[in-house]
Structure formats: C-alpha cells, structure tokens
Image 1: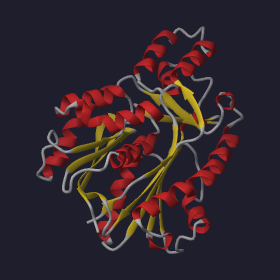
Image 2: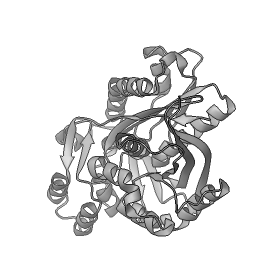
Image 3: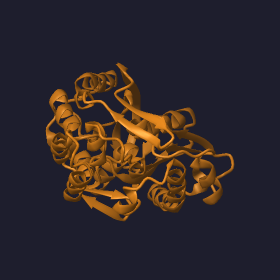
Image 4: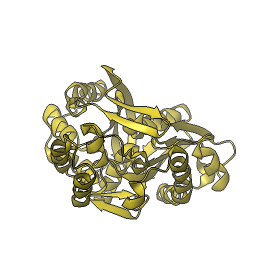
Length: 350
C-alpha cells in the first residue's frame, strides 16, 4: 500500500507577530467601523506569529498583479527545490524514482506549472507526470494526498511527490476593508511543504481509503474575486460553523472503512482557525489534545493554506511518530465548501 512519508516544511524568514498585526490594523484602518470586531477576531485566532516572503513594509504595498505574480514565481523557484530535496531524502528516494509531481497552490499562477520547471531544474525524468491543482484552496493539501494515493493504487510500484507552495501575503489587498478581509490579514501566512508518497516501503501513514465531500450550496462562502489587482479573498461569516455538517462526512469515511472516527490514534486536520478545531473536537467527541499538531501550526505559522496538513503531519513525525498500525485521519477543508479526507495507519515500512 502507498505510504505518505515525512513532510519537509519551510517558512520564509520575515516574521510578523500578532501584536504587530493588531497595531498595523489600528494604524491603517483607524476609521473603519468594522475595526473593533476585526481586532477581536484576530486576537481569537491564536496566531502568535506568521512568516512572509517580504518585509511587512513591502507586503503592505501593491505594485500590481503582474509584479506580485512575478514575485510568486521567483520566490517559488528560489525556495521549493530545497524543500523537495529534503522530502526525497527523508523518503530515501531520488528524483529518478518519482513518477508524478502533484503541485498545489492558490496564491499565484504559472503556465506551464512550476512542475515543468522542477522536472528540468532538478532532473526528474522527462516521463514524470504533472498534476497541478490551483483552485481547491486550503483543501488542496488533502486533495494532493488523495490524488497521490489514487495514483499509487493504480500504479503500485510508483512514487508520487506532493508539493504545496503558498505565499498568502502576496494576496493582500489594501482596499478590501470588510471584516472577512481584515480577519484574513491577521490569519494567513506563507509556507512551502513537500512529501513523498511511496508505492512500496517507507515510514509514515499507510493510506487506506480517501474521500471527498462538498456541502451543498456553499460555493460562494470561500472564493476569489479575480480583478485587475489580483485575487481578492472572500470569506463568509458562516465558514467557521461548517464543521457541524462536515463531521458526519468524516465519520462516514471512517465508518465505511470499519473504523470509529471518534476513537482513532491521531488526527491531522487543516487548521483554518481555532473554532474549526474546537467544533471538530465537539462533533467528533474527541479530546482537544488530539488536534495539538494542527493548533501548533496555526499558532506558529498561521493558516498556510494547502501546506497546513503537511506541516501538522510533520509535527507528528517530530513527536516520534505513532505506534505501528496506529489508526489516523487526515483532512483538508477549503472552497466549495469541500473536505478532502483520508484514513490510514502508521507503518514503520522497510
């Protein structure tokens, strides 16, 4: 069976604290009637620090979508290869062993995808399949795991490389003054993650079953309004309450596999915000401690979009992993409202 190996994660060197974020909001939006509410919401996120690709003084400028997208491309090319190499080393594989690269990102656009550049730059085989996913937002981390699982199920000897590259700070829009936008300015951070799914061998999560669920009629709750100035993030106030309808989907996936979602050994969950984790704890009847890896990502890095799930899994590895055959659940949530879910068990591999 396919095994999701240890992820490699990197965050940029520029750091902004919650206190700095709050002060910037007070300074730049002093006359905004939504400011008091936005400040309370930002404080409640529990995000202590975020990492961004530019100093905050540059981030607050808007040179135009063209310049921002050029920066996205240059930063991705400068930062992604090192993260990939660490993931390959951890999986004990070479670039020549990879059969497909699944690249997920929602914060910049390239055509051809970065996958083409990576194949040339890092000497992946010219036969390497490319699967870029650009429009699943934060759920794309879970989707990448699922598509890697599907690929390795179809080709049992194959290996898949997952890459998540998110520079959320490049989507900052100084003219967006709604509560959702102000909250987003204090919630999202930048990060890159990569992980290998091995068709044979490897230590990590042996992927056993995956699924997807979309809450009907919620496609406008998380969205981009694409304008000349770039991506304008839209966040509906109803989003934090979506765990009530999504928790049954997680239970159903585990139940179909013969497992009880309320009684697993580890949970790797997208940390979109503290209420998502609080509600999932409530509706799955799971102790809050079970989501400690996701909370740590949120606290230290903020919401790094599709990279969150991989970073939370990296923290499980850092803790020493799990006992052999320990059962777990991985899930990413994003626009749609969509859940991408996986169940699997820990394996020491070979």
